[in-house]
Length: 407
Ligand code: CA
Image (tube, rainbow, N blue to C red; front, side, top):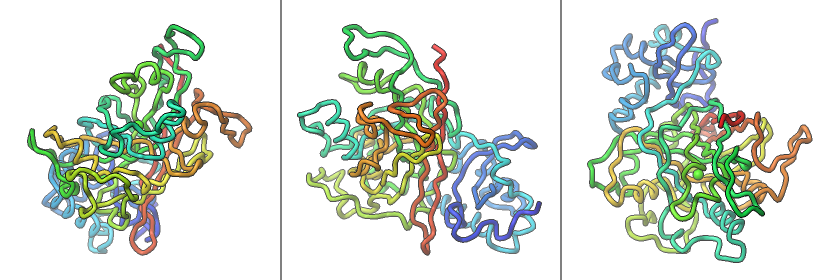
C-alpha cells in the first residue's frame, strides 16, 4: 500500500514538528540503520540522503546515531531542516514515499552506543517521600540536597532498548525480622519513571560545561525506566549508594527526540528556597525546565501521571554539576533525571512511593493486587510535550516485561 502524503496529520504526536531519531531493521533488510518517525511510518533516511545527494549522507549511513550526534548543533539543525523538506516538499515525494516503512514493520534497536551513564535524584517530591519512608521522623531531605543535584554513576553496558525482557535480579537482601542477609530473587522489584538526556558533542578533559552551553552538548531526550531492586538496595546502599540494585538493567525508549522539537516545552523551573551556587544559578540562564507529561502503566493500566516540570533541578544544572570538576563528556553519554514524582499521590513515579513501601496495595482492573512487580508484569512509560499550535510532541514509550530470575 502506498504511504500517505503528507506522511502524518499535523496533530500526530510523531508529526512533522517532532522527527525523532531511532535505529531500525526490517525483515527484508536486517542491517541496522537510522530511521526518523513520521506519523505511523518510519523514514529510512540513508537512501533518501543518497538519492538527494545530501552533504550529510555519510553521517546518516550509520548503524547508530553516534556519528550524527558527534557532529554538533549546527549539523543537527541543518539535517533536521533537510529531513523536514524531504517530508513536506512535493519535489521529494517520489524519492521519499518508497522509503516510508510502516512503523509496525520496523524493529527498533538501542538508538546510540551508550558512553557513560549517570542517574540523578532531582525530584524534591520523590526524594522527600523516600526520606519519609526510610527515615520517619527525621528531615526528609539530606543536608546537601538543595545545594547540588545528587547523582551516581550507573552501568552503561546494561542500558537496553524498550521491549527488552527484564530478568528478575537475584542478590543479597536482609528480610525484615531476620538478623543475617540471605541470597535470592529480588522480592521488591520496582520501576523509576525518568527522563534521559543524550550527549551529542563531548568536551575536552578538564573542561566544565557551563549552564549556557547545554544546547551545544545535549542532542536530545528519551524516556528511561530505572529498574530498581529495593530489597537489594536497602541492604547494600550505605555508604556508597546503589550498586547491584540498579546495574542489572536500565531501559530507554527507542526514539531520541531532538531538543529542537521541544522548543515549545520550556517553562520556568519551580521556585527554589535555597540560592544555588553561581555555577548552578539558572535564574538568568536559558533553558529552564521541560514541561513533559509522563504516564506510567502497569499491565496496560495507568497507575501514575508524573509532571516533569516539577523537578527541582533541571537538565542544564545536572550537566553543569556533572562536569564542574572537569570530568569530560563523550558522544553517547546518557544522564537520567531521577524518578519523576509530582506533589500528588497519583503523580508518583515508582511503586516504592505509590504503595508507600508495600503498605498500600494497587488494585489492577482484573482485581489483582500489587505492591511491587510480579513475574510477567509489563510496565510502559509514555510522555508528550507541548508542540507548536496546540500540537503535542510524542516521546513514544519505554516498555519492559519482568521474567523469572535465572540465578
Ligand atoms: Ca533512578
